[in-house]
Image (tube, rainbow, N blue to C red; front, side, top):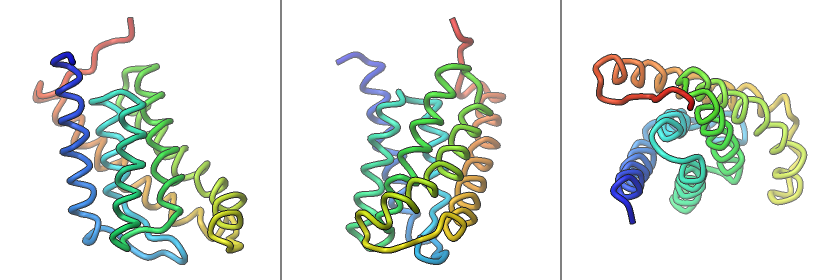
Length: 168
């Protein structure tokens, strides 16, 4: 295993622990969902620091543990994983933090509530939940967490703690 892989695994572990540890303090019930802006902060951070695959795996792991602890619902899976995927993909394509933020907001704020209302809620949860009932909470959660990550990542980049290489 390369030094880079070990560093990325360490980032995943630390950020998963952060998301889980802060979850009791940052999870807010909005209707049937429990939003967690910390998850979206972590998704954007990991989009910059690790591979897209690792980011999605971390989102799935955090969702699983949050559900096991009663701090989330099954809606946490599409809410975190779609955002993690699009955030990582957007960052890999552009090497821009703003693209990672936009990918997270589109993935979690728009696509996840659509998928959740039409597939997850009726198919897995056995509930009918309208798209418009989920949209505000998913958007609020993804926008707040992503913007906080954007501010912190820009500060870290300016301080030369992280470096986003240009696309080759």
